[in-house]
Amino acid sequence: MTVLPPSLPPAAPLLAWYDRHRRALPFRSPAGGRPEPYHVWLSEVMLQQTTVAAVGPRFDRFLARFPTVQALAAAGEGAVMEEWAGLGYYARARNLHACARLVAERGGFPRDAAALRDLPGIGAYTAAAVAAIAFGEAVVPVDGNVERVVARLAAEEGALPAAKPRLAALATGFMADPAARARPGDFAQALFDLGATICTPRAPACALCPWREGCAARRAGIQETLPRKAPKRARPLRHGVHFLLTDAAGQVLLRRRPPKGLLGGMLELPGTPWRDAPWTEAEALAFAPAEGLRWRRVPGVARHGFTHFELEMLLLAAAMPALAPPAGMEARPLVAAAAAMPTVMRKLLDLAAGGAAAEA
Figure 1 (cartoon, rainbow, N blue to C red):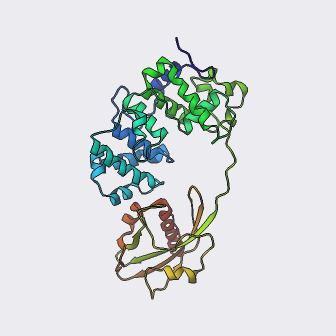
Figure 2: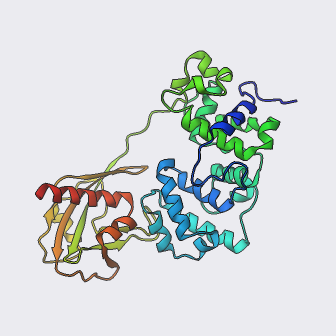
Figure 3: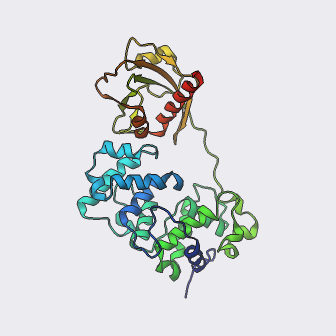
C-alpha cells in the first residue's frame, strides 16, 4: 500500500504524463535507453545557473571535443576553460575538470548519491540527479523547478531560501510511492519537465497539469504566488576599465586571469582591477598594456551582473601595426578570442562593435 505524505499526490499520473510529453533534449537518453553517466553528470553541471536553451548546443560541442570522461580528464585546464566560455560560473569548469580526473583515475563514477557528493563540484542536487537518472537510485533531486512544484502542491508559504529544507524533505516523500521508486530517473526528469513547461514561475498552465486535482495551491487560488521569496539585498556596484588593443592582422591582445578566484583561468582583455570607486582615464592608463599609444574611449558602458556585485566597465581602444605580446599575454584573432572569453568580456567586444558601427 502506498503511504505518501498527505500533501503529495501519487506518482503514477505524473509518470503517465511524462511518457506522453517528455522533452527531447540533446543530453537526455531516448525513452527506454540506458543513460550514460558521463552525459548525465556533464549536463547537470552545465545546467546549474544556465538555461536548457543555452546548454543544448554547447553540450554537443563539448562532447565533440571531450567525448568521454577520460578525454576530459586528459585535457589541459586551459582547453576546458575555453570550451566552457560563455556558460558562466567558471568554478564549475575547474571542478568539472578535477572531478573528471578523479573519476578516470578510479575507473568510473560512484553509483550512489552519498559517494557522488565526495567528488569535486558535486553537491546534493547534482549527486541526486546523477544517482537517480544514471544509476536508478531512489532519490529525488531538488532544483528550482522541483521546489516550485512541491511548494504549490503542499501550499507551502514559507519564503525561500529558508523554506528549502522543508521543500526538500517533502520532495523526498515521493519515494514512499512504489511507482516513483520503480522509475526514479524518469520520475526526476518528469518533475523537471513539469516545472519547466507546465508549473512555470508565471502563469502556470494548471488546466494541463496531471496533478491539478491534488494541488493545494491551485485549490486555494495562490499558485502564482508560490514559492514565496525573501527580498533580495541590493548588490554593490564595482567599476573597471579594460583595453582593446588590436593590430592590422585583426588580432587582439589578451591575458589570462590567475587560476584561482573569480573567472579563474579565463582569458580577458587587459585592464584595471575592479573596485568600488569609478576610475578616471588618467588612473586607468597606468594599467595600459602598451605605452606611447593613443587610447580612444569607446562610447558607452558595459554592464555585467555577478552573484555578489554588479560591474560597470569602460573600454579604451588602440591599434598598432603588429602586436608583440608582453610576458603573460597573448594575441589571437578577434573571432577566436571572442569564442574563448567569458560573457563579461564579450560584452566589451559588443560595446566596441557598437562604437565602430556608430562611427561608420
